[in-house]
Length: 93
Image (cartoon, rainbow, N blue to C red; front, side, top):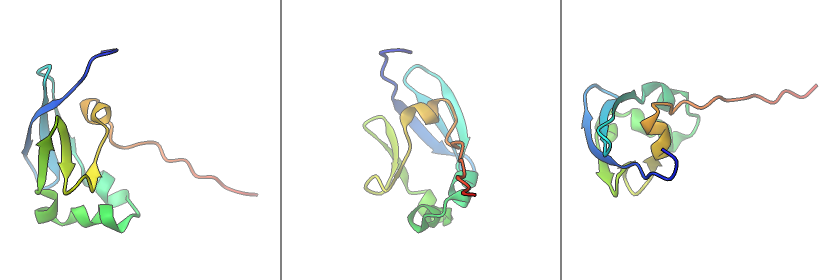
């Protein structure tokens, strides 16, 4: 994949917070966004737990977006179905 551009060509909601993505290399992923949205502490992201708001996504320029890029994800994370990033906690002694 090095040096290759990946684009989403199709996105279809298949569950309350689950979207099936098809990429331009015919790869597909079914991504469940609920855990990501639920774990966020940011109120603008948590607002997408409202099913009607979540359903307002679209594919634009090969990317999956909501609103005016209010919610979007790196294409490689969607391609790998890895939108959950490891969160580390710094603990001071």
